[in-house]
Image 1: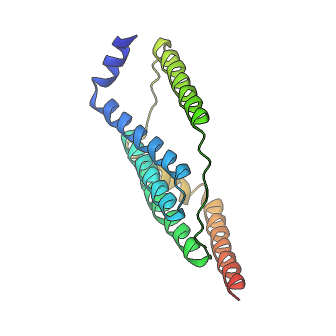
Image 2 (image 1 turned 60 degrees about the vertical axis):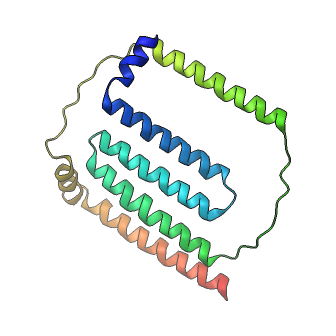
Image 3 (image 1 turned 180 degrees about the horizontal axis):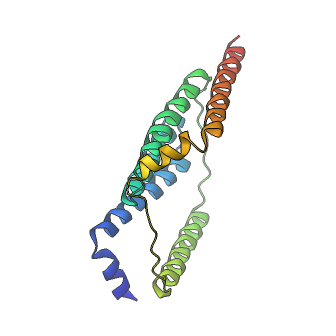
Length: 175
């Protein structure tokens, strides 16, 4: 069982995958753990950037580019604008300390990790080969602008209407 683990960590791409996976999980945990909204947005952007790195590792450059451009860039900036346009009062929250709850939660997480680790290490995964396009970014572009041009344009109109609606709602709350 441990020989599988040694084989896994002997490859550089597996080490990079493991690092990106830890960054993604850590960013997601920080996002739900932080109490300040700006810190949540920063940790979410870190998670999106790490996910883009994982896509690059999987040789999906277009998806990685879209992940970084749309999610890490645009969605994070949109959230920061939302934070700036809304009214937030600073208030101290009294957090109830529950040491038994936290201890049981930690033990449950470790047990789940152990079960998943054992199940993955004892499983046999069949090798599958997929035929990839020579230049997947060009292939995606060709399909978007030929076969799927109508849904692509409808999506751009829908996003424009949603953006204008968000501006109208924000202006109404201000008045």
